[in-house]
Length: 300
Image (tube, rainbow, N blue to C red; front, side, top):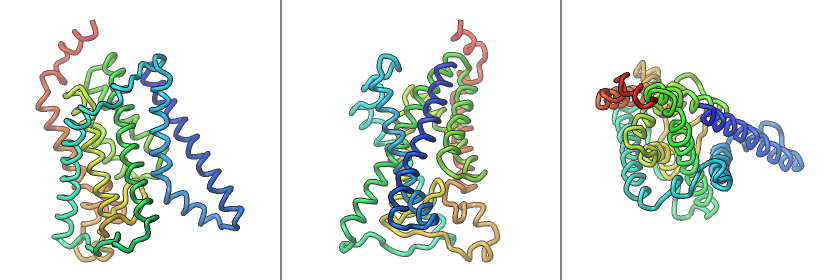
């Protein structure tokens, strides 16, 4: 338990400190050119995912460099075999879910398709910016899945029953996300359900790689490919898919179902899918997860 809390506190402090350093540097350079505070805020918001992604990557690298103090090896973080056999299929599953949700919302008229944003004549800087943002998002997901679903969950399972460890890890994950981004209640609820589902899957398979692929696939497709907002951040991706502003008045409850302008992570429909996945995993592994005798024998 102490090691899990140590990782949580260290990563939270690292994230907050990294954000402050990035904001300080952006403010310093933009103030020198006479930029207004709104411009500074917009610039930081546009690069927020990149900053947090770099922060998580450097934190995991630091954990590796501090081995054996942190008991973190390179093979534990990444191996080509696990990446190919687990991350790849998981990524396809998450990407399929993101595409399916978007297609449903397009067909019922809640989303609108505005065509390709990335064109052959788009400046190279635009492609580079999108590529860097995609890599930052992928690094953020992979590194945090390693930290939460491998390190923190592993230490909590040594002291707590599996269900309690998974739920507590999900709460820790949401607390960190609240420090990283400005999120509403629906967003936090989705993240809690997603973290619970990912934790149950990692617990079942004994590895975080597939769950990392599923989460990365969903977020990258929705954000980098379809230009939908996540974590309160918007970006112009490869395709332009937008929430239809007049849909609230026309259809009554589409904002609640889709998340509206808040993006798919505020969607009740996604929350429902995640809830079903959580219940399915609990039912599938109920003999282990809910059997108190088996749990107690593990701690003896």
